[in-house]
Length: 326
Image (cartoon, rainbow, N blue to C red; front, side, top):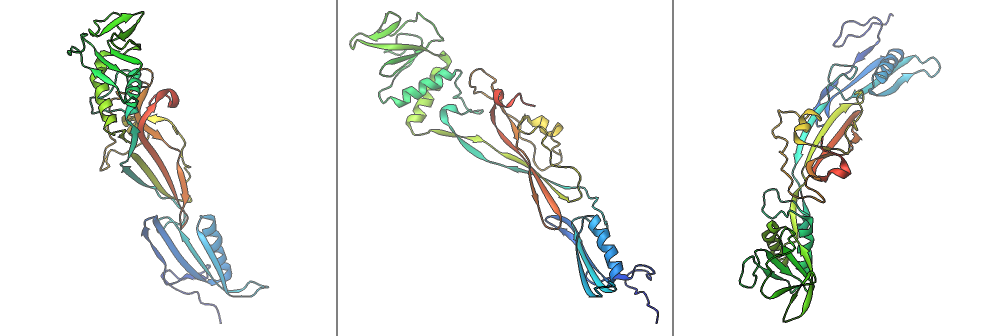
């Protein structure tokens, strides 16, 4: 009796003596699209499907249900699954792109923090050093400009051995009545104590005094914006573009996040606008706000899927270490 090709959801088969089994399924989950199917029939026909799907990147299993181990004639079943959309045999999908904004803060030492919305940014790094010394000394004294105990027009602050004069570097100032200029130093007559003389910007007196009071009150840190923008791509194993290291380690401005890194303008959030840095290390401008591009993270998921994650960390970065902001 001649073998009659089966008919199941297809036309009558004439050369492919395998047929689609019940339970062929496809769908979409948190890893993206997927397919799964099963064919049974002559071993040679199932083997052809096995090779076709294997070459197309599917995960394939062959089961010899009843096959002669010499002639390889008989019945077999091939099962396969993949991570791209039905009904494509080869993965031709566009990767799923997910953009997230993760708000974070990091605590920064008060004297090294930048205050983009505050009024306590010192104009000189020497001022921050002075405040640190004054806060460490329990007997620090502060003299307001023009106060009854300060005959000068400049603010003064004392530790046990140092006088910080907020006089913009003037060498001959109208010193307090209790002070005398002796060999380039100042001394209090009644105590005969000599002080090291340190010049500071006059504009920093109120800033220094505020920082000093905060430190004495136990406020030692300030929360600094450290949000992360995360770009995740879900792809199949047939996706040919590898994870990119372009601009990795560089600092990127908010406008360049759109033009250079391709952040879509249709998201439910905008890339935060960069504040103007008021703090610096050596010279104004040597610290810049931006997004540091971290090297990508690549992980393999089920159903032949891959996840590529790219993070951008917001912060205030030294341009001499990272290069100018893109």
